[in-house]
Each structure stands twice: as C-alpha cells, then as structure tokens.
Length: 80
Image (cartoon, rainbow, N blue to C red; front, side, top):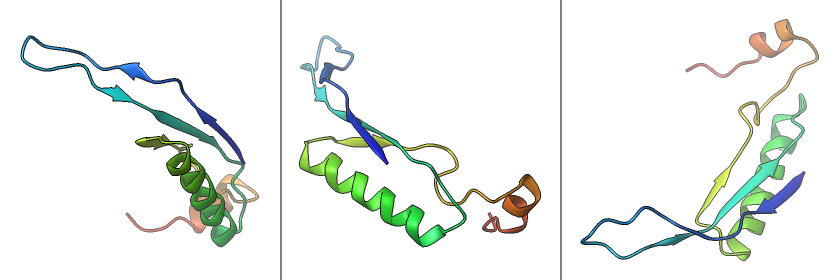
C-alpha cells in the first residue's frame, strides 16, 4: 500500500466565514481476493492518515476485493 498526504489548502470562503484548512490523504492499494488482508491495508493507511493529521482519506473504488477475473469478482461481490 502507498500512502500520500496532500499539503493543506484553504477551503472556499464566504463573507461570514473564516478560511478552514483541510488535510487529505490518498491511499493507493492493490486489492486481492483476500478481503481480510485488503481491509487490514485500509486500516493501516487510515492509521497513518490520522497520525499525520489528515481529516479525510480517499480510497480506490475496488478496495475490498479484486477477483482473478471479472466473473469471480462479481460472484464474490457483497450485496448492496
């Protein structure tokens, strides 16, 4: 898993609010067919993000499971 912290940026301001600083983390994960291992990698990245002061973390869309084929992935998908 790779982990990146983006530099703080000011959010949009209006006349009645002061600027807020937000810190974001981006996690780059290679999901596999092992759901438990995938979630452990997400937890590690979340810990790193929290340690480094991130208020939000962005994850890839297929973080929980990636099968050996498209059919395998669909067959193992969690119900919505």
